[in-house]
Image (cartoon, rainbow, N blue to C red):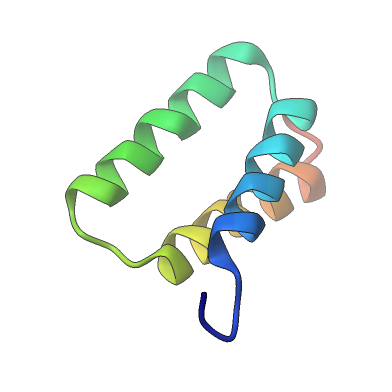
Length: 63
């Protein structure tokens, strides 16, 4: 474990996304996360991108 516990933060972001998004959109975000993993992006980058999706969905009030 480093300075930031990105495993825990990613787990929390997924829980919030699952709560706020529709089932279809959550599945799409999960596919995006898998694509980020396959592209070898770091956990920090994945966390940042997923938090941005969560923030934008809340701001725009879209599921």
